[in-house]
Every structure is written in structure tokens, then in C-alpha cells.
Amino acid sequence: MSIIFCQVTKYQLLKESGERGRITNYQLSTVNCQLSTLNSQLSTIREYGDPVRLSRIAASRQHQNFKP
Image 1 (tube, rainbow, N blue to C red):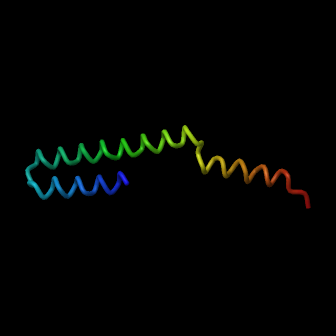
Image 2 (image 1 turned 30 degrees about the vertical axis):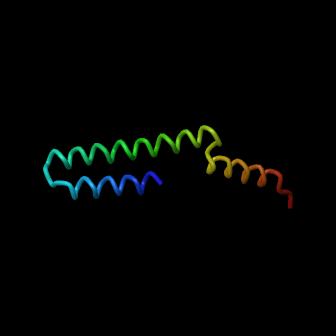
Image 3 (image 1 turned 45 degrees about the vertical axis):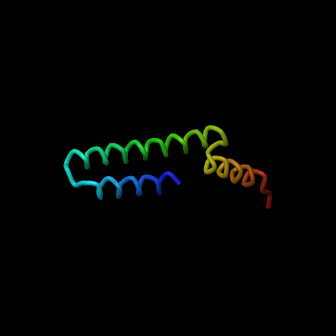
């Protein structure tokens, strides 16, 4: 959802004006938007655990339990 918001902000700012200062502000807002997206992803991982890591742990446990 936040990625779409970033894109909309980008086009609004670029449409409003092409001044150098405006573009610099746009770049800063994009970075801020990306950082907030990463922060929300990190808080999700902290809350629920890293899904990739959890699936690796599950896979390694299944492998250890596997007896031919």
C-alpha cells in the first residue's frame, strides 16, 4: 500500500513543477517513504518472526526428523 502512495506522491510533485528544489524534495520524500515502508516491515518481522527464517527452521526440523 505504501509503495503505491510513494508513486502517487512522486507524480504529484513532478507534475506540480520541474524546479531543481522541488525534485530534491521529491527525492527526500521518496527516501522517507521507503524508510517508513522498511520500518513497518521490520516491526512486522519483530512481531511475527521472519517468515523465511521460520520456514527454514521448519524445513531443517523436518529434515532432522526424516528417517529413510
